[in-house]
Image (cartoon, rainbow, N blue to C red):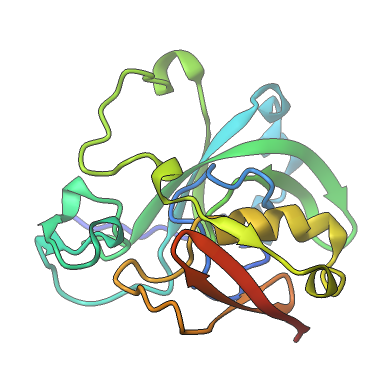
Length: 228
């Protein structure tokens, strides 16, 4: 088999230091703001000429925390409870022959920074902090948008949305400008799909804080917020 080497052109700066809690698809939580920081050799402003004209971008990136050897033709999609197997190429599972991910994100702007040079501010990314990005391409509506497309066994995200309750005393501990993003992330039910224990307290790291929560029925209640 013919092989070639690819290398990261950039890395993501996001509020997720761990995999747990990251939205399962891009664009679900559009209040999540991240930064694309280019590797030094790719920080030329010329490489981004014209990008401001696009509202959305495709990111091609690596499932850097899910690299494993071998090939399995089937996987267990979380949205099917983790018990039913589907073909790997019929899913977006991170466990793939080549651990590559594809995300559509909103371009908020191009900024020049003293430390990192030219960076991209994006919204809706489903990426962990430090994720390597291999390529960036513009999203073009007339060819990339298919409103009548079928979603197979993957139902709409709304079917899984939880009601989130954050007590005022806990909300006061968290940066107000990120509170909406936190609530939206929690509403997507960060728990593994096969977990349904209402008595269990889960912990999620987000934006420099440890978030403790439990789920009863369709309601998620934040039990504690502590700065790391």
